[in-house]
Picture 1: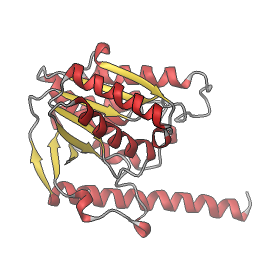
Picture 2 (picture 1 turned 30 degrees about the vertical axis):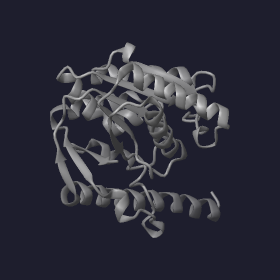
Picture 3 (picture 1 turned 90 degrees about the vertical axis):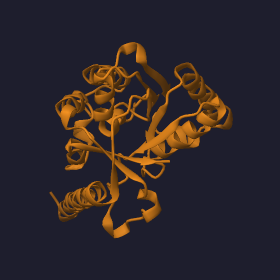
Picture 4 (picture 1 turned 180 degrees about the horizontal axis):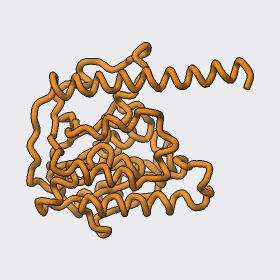
Amino acid sequence: MGNREIISKLRVTFGAKLRSINAGILSRWILYFKSQPLAVSQKSAMVFSPHQDDETLGCGGTIALKRSQGVPVQVVFLTDGRYGRPEWIQPERITDIRQQEAVDALQILGVANSEIHFLNQIDNSLQNLPNDQRQDLVTRLAQHLQSFMPEEVYVPHKKDFHDDHEATYKLVQEAIALSGIQTELLQYPIWMFWQNPLSFSLKFEDVADARRLAISAVIDRKKRAIETYRSQHPGLPSGFLERFFLPYEIFFKD
């Protein structure tokens, strides 16, 4: 191995460690000092997930708590997740594998197959959809909202530092307006805390009105659901999953 390769690997390792430390500090600061407690509600919920695993990482505990109390929950996946592919999976198999992982994870969390919807947009395309495709997708999202009439809607944070995640927030906002329903919008962070502190760009207003939901009663179920996404674990940065094993989930009121 040459010097350049060694230096490159060291940079990647150091960068991941720096981001992991920063994510741990920031998430715990918000959890324990800047957030208000949130009780699990009896409100029906629709969770919008850009990719198969975001729903479990961000809302797995909330989903499990609601379902354990018989509260209706539906999950809508916007993309097919085709680019979240480890080398050992053939390209033509990855979308089927990810869908099955999602079904298995949500079964652990208590969501029936009939309450899961796959819209199969091309992974990493939501930010740049042509106008006609974008409007068609917003219409489909609005139809799901009108059909289920959720009292709560969960979406990725509007500044989640991933194009598909931020696009999902905007698309769902437009769909809610188009549907005409009255619902409460809560944002869940996935990549938002995973930033290099040397180029940190979050502002105070981005993390205002934070809420923490205790999920200790179902944390084992959430961990098992996360473990179901075996295709995704190899591609995640070292230390990334640690935050999602905490006994709380963080949400931000819109």
